[in-house]
Length: 98
Image (cartoon, rainbow, N blue to C red):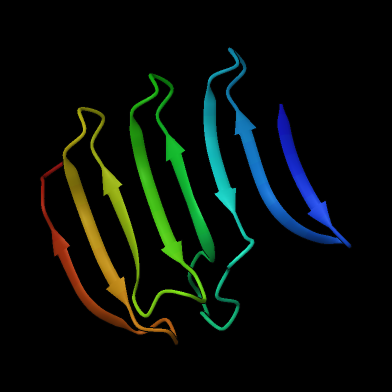
């Protein structure tokens, strides 16, 4: 199942669910930095089927620095990276081994 909210043809929010009804993905594009090339825009989260956070990102117009992070199924940060307003990487860290 998918839920989405639009305003005058522009996608504002998006949610996607696993077949059992648990949330799989949620994204908010209301303040998305559309200038970032090759990266996710807006802010969002993806979850494992057990409900644990798998991946998150935030690239908004109101933030000077954007980020994305990946997690292991037990909640440890596996990878994180930070980006400037144009989408250039300014720092990253491989934290946990898979």
